[in-house]
Image (cartoon, rainbow, N blue to C red; front, side, top):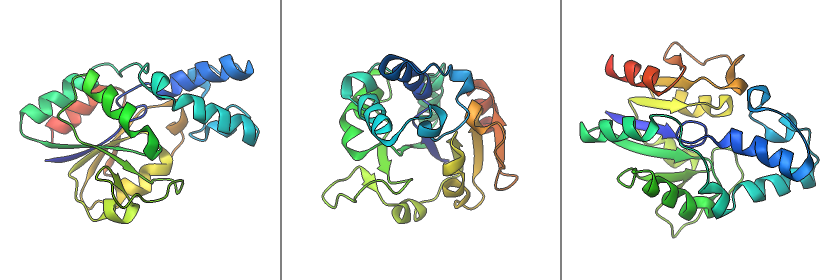
Length: 200
């Protein structure tokens, strides 16, 4: 099978780190379980300058490399690759975060998994001479049988893939999300995700 896997808050615990950064930078204390919005500017009630500072800090290489792995993520992904499944890690991170993101994957045993930066949210300019970035149109030209996502803003993107089963990684900001169709299934952890995958 061809498998789409989101990076942040699926493979690594990004929101937990941003919660710590908001406290460190602005003394804004919003515990992880209270991160109600995928939009972190809204979650932490930041002005534009604060939000820019938060995002810049959160994407510094040393910060990206410090993110904790989501339990059993690398183990499960490696098992799938050993079984011959084709994995693509798709991230909406800024294109200039690619090198540190690639290093994080390599350091966590996922050196075989290709990483693609996709302009999911209309923030980036396309890099014509790069092999790691895609426009949404280019992403939509691909096919996937299984996807893992946490962001309600990205649900329409994975809904584009016909007959693709989507594991929605349970997170505080997607508790009240409306799923596009019956292919979307809430999963509490990587054990649930693997169970859904194996039932396909």
